Length: 439
Image 1 (cartoon, rainbow, N blue to C red):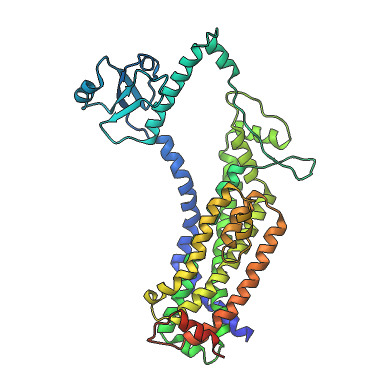
Image 2 (cartoon, one colour):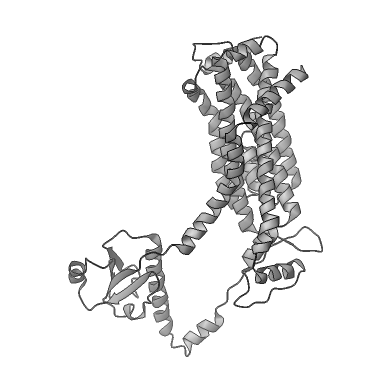
């Protein structure tokens, strides 16, 4: 019987791996993921917005002379009432900025009348400049000599360096930014993975059921073994794809990045690895960037993430694939499956929503318990792993996940054995419960 399961696994594996779509998606997905991460930075770096001309009507006479033009905004003060300015300057000007005469006592007495669609960036730029001017005016009333020089001297930018306090003599750098980015990307990837591959199993069962293939196979293979072989076969395809992605990303990280890294950045990283301080100069790399690179080049950290990703991905897929396979066996087409599919997809969506909370506080009670509940643990636990949580929590979560998979396979097989021979009937929840109770 085990040999029959192996044959089914082999068939499912070869059927999917030999497709051109598998090869194309396997090779292009890592490039697409890198492109999605790099594209926003490139767009922000090279995109140039048109400079906005803004008319300024300053009834107070305090703010307008101190507004500074920049690459985004050009200010033009005029001595006109606001009503006249709004009528006259409608063409060739982006907006009219009106500052009230009591701006120092009423900071909210500022209005921007736009002739075109505005943006958060522009409005934030204007508000920040006005805030700085008002703060400076209020400080002048304290009659402090050399106030600008004093403010320049006391201005300090603190760059916080984070290290893991694990009792070792050697400090281990940690980066919350890196952990957050990795948690978000991998959790969202798991969310898509569970839905896509789970639905793939369901559609495969529906197709084989309509082609009467399952009726032939069930004469020589038990329904439980048939379902388990199909699930494990698709899981092996998913594992192969993830392993290839990890290998490609590792090759890019260790073979390409060191050659394109600037010399100053390489020297700063070498100093941090030796526990030496980096020189505080204008050309010195940002400490946050250095810590991020150190975290991404920590072999132990990356191995923990990759192993956890594989185990959570496989466990989550096995759990949900069993339920999707049961649904596929109970219906004749994808449209009928949508109603039964909703109770299965809701926990996946809930896990994604909880993941956003986990990123803010990975050690909260809600993060801990939802990372232990098997239906949500693959996504939620994957969001917690990059934050270097205790190993025992990962182990307990995995044990519960795989134990639940075994129980769900046994339950789903009871529906599967009846559903694959049923045709022309759209079952409901009550009907599925009746199938489950059949002996």
